[in-house]
Image (tube, rainbow, N blue to C red; front, top):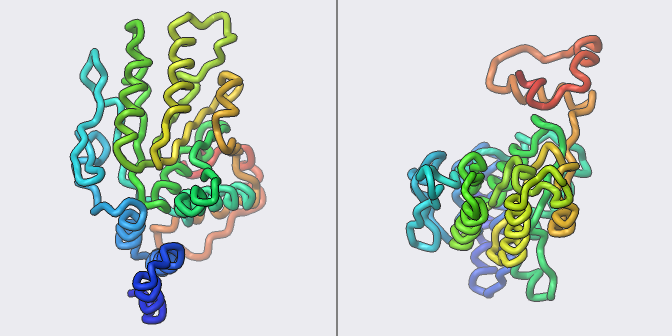
Length: 301
């Protein structure tokens, strides 16, 4: 449990109506529980602090039918032709220790977390927190994992977009599906994640693309520009060169994910084998040299 001094300070800040102080102490308590490997408790506390809601219903897991937000159950939007879900709600179970990125990327992500947590304070001073992130880089280098970690650290469910259901062969239906996604995301606080974003964000200058895809890109611009919910929006692509140029300026931060460096490889292997009992792990220089150029996912395999 949290130390007595922290609990006393928490109660003092509450009775003094010191919201920033209350939140700061609450974050210290959550960090303590995380260090003790009490991840379920820490996640529940973070979720309560973030949106004042009880833990989400089990029905909100991958493949579920909907989720609870603000005391109401909201069924997931569905594909109009096949009646398949456009979204999955994933309960995050990844946190900072699961992430191996450069120190610069780590610092940037931590700043995003801080700004989202203190969004009300920033807004009272006329500033807007970073809420739109674009992840770029080769496959298997941690983009999806990072979205899960941000969701876990914020105590928010991950709203995962299923592009196999979003893309439609019928005129106008893809844009309609995107509208349903943003309308659903308005009903609460989430980490809204668009994986394989180049599927809908391709450049309108590409002569090989038909007019319908250009209308989809325009529709996405309008939906994103008008989306004011207190959620974190993340788009990820393996092919940033295909994206429409107008998309770049709509994101607050563009974060590049590269293949791990030689120095990062041992940490990835150690994390992968952490569940197994073994003697001190040592990788030979020859083995490290062979792994240079592999993605995170390739190394873990």
